Image 1 (cartoon, helix red, strand yellow):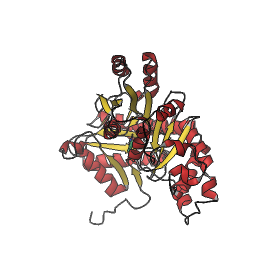
Image 2: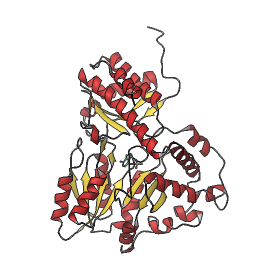
Image 3: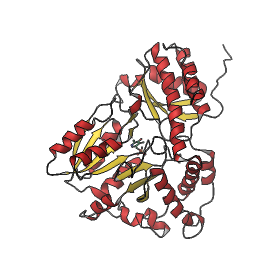
Image 4: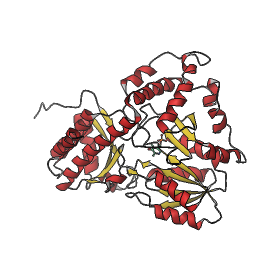
Length: 402
Ligand SMILES: *Cc1c(COP(=O)(O)O)cnc(C)c1O
């Protein structure tokens, strides 16, 4: 045992739910000298980037890019349509729903939260009731999170649109797709979404640093009726840009643009329907393994009903400190980094050590997922954490039969 080798050298897998694994093609595209921002390649790339972003979002309307992370996308979107004193309705299914609402609070909005807890999807009937009670149509927007990355719940966004329509309520439907775009099926126009936001570092496979706001004509009409919108966040000049600087209200994120071009090429080559289908099969393999482990131990998926599980991220819990022990073990011994539990317990609460998450978004394939599951199997065994048998076989069966 004195010479027990460490098995973590080799290519790692950062299996946290963002930032996600970056493809070589993205990294190589970014590895270059500073390009001229006044003419040439990076300038000429912009129309095709906007075109392909809209294709991934499944919208014919407007796409804008901001330098910033997901929090910036929240601020950007809300700044265009929510003025101080405006009322917004926020159905919350995890930490990020609260985050979206907090940004609205920061902008002076009157925020009405419907909290569905940490392990359940939105209840559309409760949303319908809140809309029915809003007889004067004070609610200006519903802020929904498609996949809440903390709980890994997948919400029924089309269902929220149907509820708005059934109530004859004019509120905008604004959706956070930061975790889900390029992973879980999302159809902006077909589902009647007015504003959608996302960021570069999850399903889009590009480093953190740029984010995106998509909007339609209904949202633009609301924007035009705003008393004022700060210049930097205003989406109007960005969405009509003809010169390079106008897309970004200043110097563009040159290297991110090259990386994004490469990532969009990869998504186009595979086809967005295939991208979704790949995520679905890989997620089902993970769920099958988790079900098998759970048969003989404490491992549980946070979302019980598979219809409401994201295919990009899986939130899990064990018992005691076992979540943290397993994360430490797989990273130290095998080079696979699992995600921390987020929002399930307060940071100073020891209960947080039971929770962890798996990120399986973007640039992931079958061997990475089988490696991830095999590493967890080894960790559970090595640490003596009770677990059911047959998890890897169950995952392999899903992949074999897909
Ligand atoms: C990651 C994430 C965010 C926050 O993005 P940052 O880039 O960390 O600001 C917000 N919403 C969801 C659903 C996310 O997954």
